[in-house]
Each structure stands twice: as structure tokens, then as C-alpha cells.
Length: 207
Image (tube, rainbow, N blue to C red; front, top):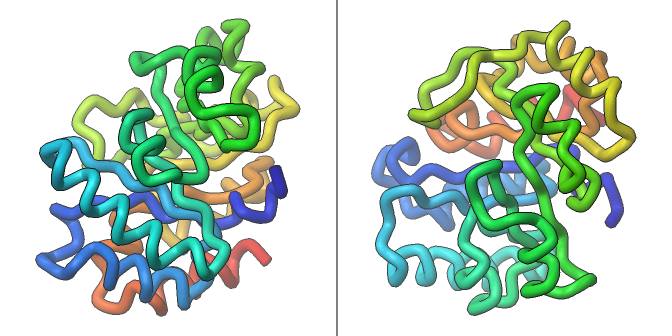
């Protein structure tokens, strides 16, 4: 996996997109420099999730932007997505790998030292580490790590790491300096008046 794709990951949220078609928000964000898109649908039906995944795949593939599906291996297989991101309570990484094959990308969420010590933390291609700051886009989010907590956790792994949770252009610089390979952003882009400009501001931070 080329770690350059981790520089700016847009994590989608239809509720926060302010009624705009998700593919339009993603298209604007890609123009601003998004390098990977994670489709996260916590409340959509399977059919809605599938339709969104198909639309995003059709847009992203010609542009060489990877589409990662959150949690749902079946959706990823159905649309031939580029990978899957799973959390600690989702399907184990080794099983995901057996289903999607060796050429796909797998990300795993890590929120504390105990999770990082588990053997399966060595199996994914990258780790999504956080939350960095307090945020409202994930109801079951863990206690924020803060920059120093992130730095300590990040130092325990040689895996590529994307930081996530409450990130904006004002607080992301120290996170990159603490060792993040990239940033995963939700509301600061999908809720922005101008998603393209918002993504561009993050891109400028991590060149």
C-alpha cells in the first residue's frame, strides 16, 4: 500500500452533509485534495448503503481515489471497493482478509494501548487512531487521547497511522507533528459551506 493515500481521508456522514447529495460533497472534497474516502453509514438500510457505495465507486475509480467501506464487508465485496475499515467490535481482521483477498486495504480502529497490544493489530494495512479530541459524529466514541496521548500510542507501532476524532485545521498540525501519517476528517469537511475549500485547507497542512 502506498501510504500517500492516507494523507487526507474523508469519512462520510449523510446526516452532516446538510441535505446535499453525498457524491457531490465527496466530489468537491476530492477537488480539494482528499486522497481516500471511507463510506460510513450507521443508519442507512443495506440498499441505501449499497447505492451510495456504487455511486461513490463510479466517481472515485476513474480518479484513482480508493474507496474504503466502514464495517460492511458484504458491501465492499458487492461494489469491488478498495478496502474495508473495521472497529474493535466488528469482524476480526484475519477473517476480513480471508474474504476480501490480499490485494485490498484493511484499516483497524485503535483507541487505547490494550487494543494495540492485541495480536490482530499487526494484521491491517493501517491503523485509525483516536479520537484525538472531543467530537459528536460518533455516539460511542472513546475518551479523547489528546496530542500527547496520541504521540505515546503512535510510538508503539510501526504501522501507518491515520488520526481521527474532532480534527479541524486549527488543531491538526500538532497531530501531524506527533507522528500521524494522515488525517481522517468528518464534519470539518462534510458540513462545510465549501467542502472543496475545507479539504484544500487540510491538504495544505499535510503536504
